[in-house]
Amino acid sequence: MKEIKNEDKILEKIKRLFWDVNKEDVGLKVHHPYIIRRILDYGEIEDIKWMLSTYSKEKIVKVIKKSRGLSRKSAYFWSAYFGIPQREITCLRRPYLKRLRPF
Image 1 (cartoon, rainbow, N blue to C red):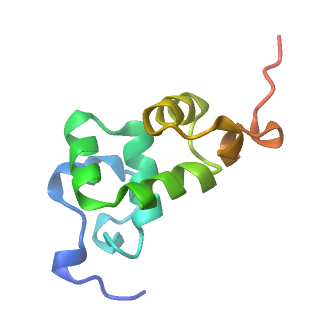
Image 2 (image 1 turned 90 degrees about the vertical axis):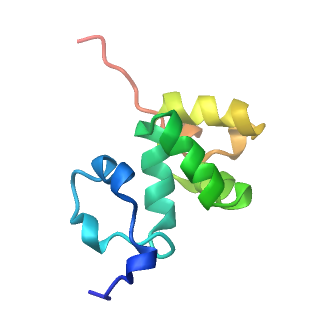
């Protein structure tokens, strides 16, 4: 795996959002879609402020539109926040919506 430079590593305060990977292998630039998605779904106010100051609005909106793994709840919220038409968000399109079974 490619060595991540110190200035490209994720900050200590958001490492808790990456419980399923080796945190030392996550780079701010290389893995920005993954980082943004995690913050959109699980981040707290401080994490979101950091994300908005670190990544451009265009990058964040692109991740929202293209992400298939974003939760529906988060997708609806961020759609309203950024003014993104829901039809443009991949995870809200019909094939990606999970059907709930009554039993």
